[in-house]
Amino acid sequence: MKKITVVGCGVMGSSLINALMTAGFKVTIVDLDKSRAEAFIQRGADYAASLKEAADEDFILLNLPTHQIAASVIKNAPAEKLEGKILVDTTTSSPSEVKDMAAIAEDRKMIHLDAAIEVYPGDIGTPSGYIVYAGSRQAFDSTEPALKALGKAVYLGENIVGASVTDLAVLQVHFAAIAGLAEASAFCIKNGYPVEKFIDQTREILPIMLEGNLRSFAAELKDYDRNFEDASECTLNIEATATETILRAMKSDGVKTPCGDAVLKLFKDGIEHGFGSKNVCSVVNELI
Image 1: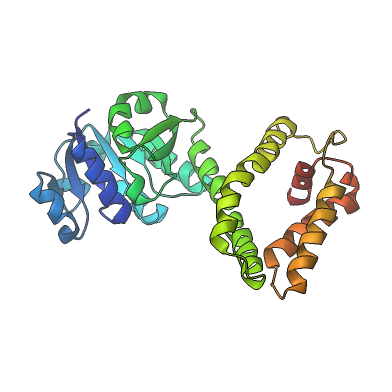
Image 2: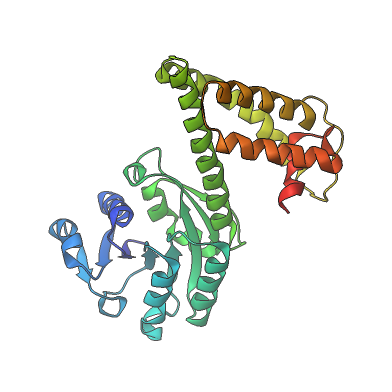
């Protein structure tokens, strides 16, 4: 597949277009603002103000600010233009929005593949590029050469919400880590310790610590039924005591700890409900 229509020429859309063109694909850009596409037009891209005006393509790739905009683009395009076409939607969407797009695509007899971009625009088209896909295996296999031009292309299966759930879940971990990183950095500053030295050691230590958590969450939540065996190593009681020690030290130095306070409350709620001797992953019960 060499002819691709990309709808959306914003920051991320431009990175996708650049990677595809660099890899030799013929790209038609659809965007209301032609000026955004000018640099690519000079490199040989075609331009259209709407899907209706776009030249024929092998597949359509969406990268738009919201699901609502993406859905309206497909709904407003001529049905005959879309029938039988592969739709790759990289717009950040919730699972319910992905299901809505799947219904829209099915109604227009399109082959739907949802995607979630897990990197920043500058990583697209480089070895660090990473995008996950879910939905039609046929669509993934047919478009894989183009998808690989964007970065590592990981197919998660036919469950259409797989990419969205993965994306939002990983981002939740990411943003929670940012909050913890901010509190930890403030603690270093208060103690006159260089933040860059703390960061250097975090790079070394955290992957080792986190791997144990990832392993236990994956194993113990595989067939989740709210029941847990007693922990063989660190119990929730031990984790809560350690957290109290950390927060006491930070607060004594005048550091505000809203993130840490929330973590401790979650641990204590789990202990109150009888999971003190269980692994820390048992706190999932407090969230469902």
